[in-house]
Picture 1 (cartoon, rainbow, N blue to C red):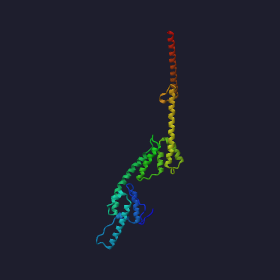
Picture 2 (picture 1 turned 180 degrees about the vertical axis):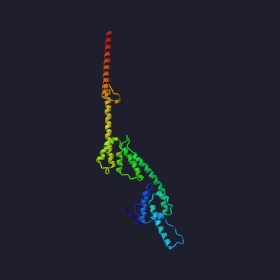
Picture 3 (picture 1 turned 60 degrees about the vertical axis):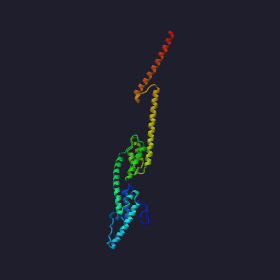
Picture 4 (picture 1 turned 180 degrees about the horizontal axis):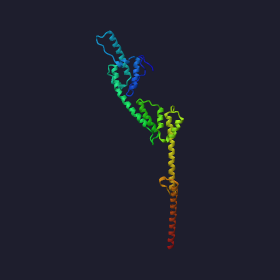
Length: 268
C-alpha cells in the first residue's frame, strides 16, 4: 500500500451501507498510525479566555488533530454518509453519527445471514431440476450470503452440491469423490462433469420411450394390443390368442359371403 505526502494510504477504504464492521477496523488502524485515534474516542475541550499559555497550546494541538481526523473521515465515506456528517463540528460527533446509522444495518444483516444459513442447509436438488438450474440456485444463494459477510470457499459449495444431488447421480458422485481432489476441484469442472452425465441419462430415457412406442405400433399393426403395458408371458399368449380368433372370424365371414352369392345365382 502506497502513502501520500501526508502519510495517508493512497487507497482508502470507503464506507457504504454494507461494510461498517470492516471499514471501522480499517479506519481506526489508519488513525492509530496517524496517532489521532484518541480524538475520535475522547474528543477535546475548548479553552476560555483565562486559559494559560500551555492550555492554549494543547487546545491548538488537539484542534489540529481533530481537523486531520475529520479530513480522513470525509475521504473514507460515500456520498450518502457524507451528507449525514457534513454538519458535524468535531470528528467524535461525526464518528458517533456514522456508528449510530450503521449499527442497526449490521444487526439486520446478521439476522438475514442467519436466515440464509438455515435456507442453505435445507437446499437440495429437485427431482425435475436440471444441473444448470441447481448450480445457479446454489451460487446465487451463496453470493447473497457473501454480501452479508459470510466466508464460503468453493470446496464447501462443491461438497454441498455433491451431498444434495438426486439419486440418479449417486454413482457419478462416488466416482468424483474417489478420483478427484476436492480441494483443487473447480466448480466449473464439477458442473461440466454432472451436465455430461445428465445428458447421457436424458438420451437413454428418450431411447427407451422410442422403443416402447415402436412396440406398441407393431402390436396394433398385427391386429392385437395389450392393455396396461403388461408384457408377461401369460399376457403375450392372451394377446396372440385374441389375434388368431380375429383372423379366423374374418375368414369365416368371407366364406359365408361367397356361399350366399352362389346360392343366389342358382335360384335365379
